[in-house]
Length: 247
Ligand SMILES: C[S@@+](CC[C@H](N)C(=O)[O-])C[C@H]1O[C@@H](n2cnc3c(N)ncnc32)[C@H](O)[C@@H]1O
Image (cartoon, protein in one colour):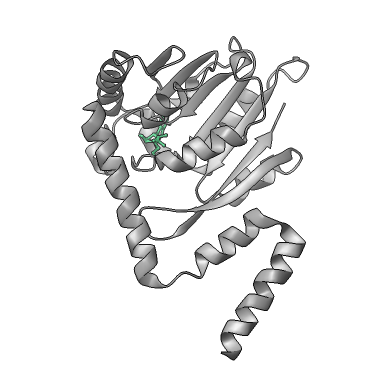
């Protein structure tokens, strides 16, 4: 009883201090284990249903050694696993921008799940950049099947290219989305590319999901955080996301 009272007092104090969103996260983190397991199972099931419904292949993770390890991009790569669909919808809805002005870019787009979801919003366009030819081909197949159903509100494409080689200079206003795609050295190189040239009047929003390497977090320190949050991954642990205004 004492413990319960303490938890309630903690919740009230936190909700006063940090607002409802943070309180919800605290409640979520204190759920009993079976409830977590049920939530995770429900999420996995929803993803499987998505794949079945649209006849696409986005759910099954792909281990790194199954990808083209000889490609230069493989050096810093992290395995393929798709962003949770509900989390992505929530993040996109948190962006208070005129979507028609922005190109949405998924860096390390894998099988293209993020592209299929983002294209349901009226962005200027949606682009995925994926170093693995194998995953890129799966993404092209998924895009073809999904786009034909008429759910997309913009053009979407997957580009087979190393994120470190991609030229952002012609894109204009952009939202860069990253779900734990590669290590800090490459991420900081990409950030350097994104921030060039500094005099441009373009807007760049940078979204990062997953454990952010300290070197990346340091590089982002000067930039305003628009929003941040946490979500329960399919693998049973809480992951963070943050949205930064970098230009
Ligand atoms: C965790 S998965 C995320 C997939 C996708 N963004 C999603 O959320 O559904 C990371 C992806 O980044 C890709 N990747 C890793 N290094 C890369 C690089 N240098 N250039 C482009 N893609 C890369 C991996 O192959 C993998 O598909």
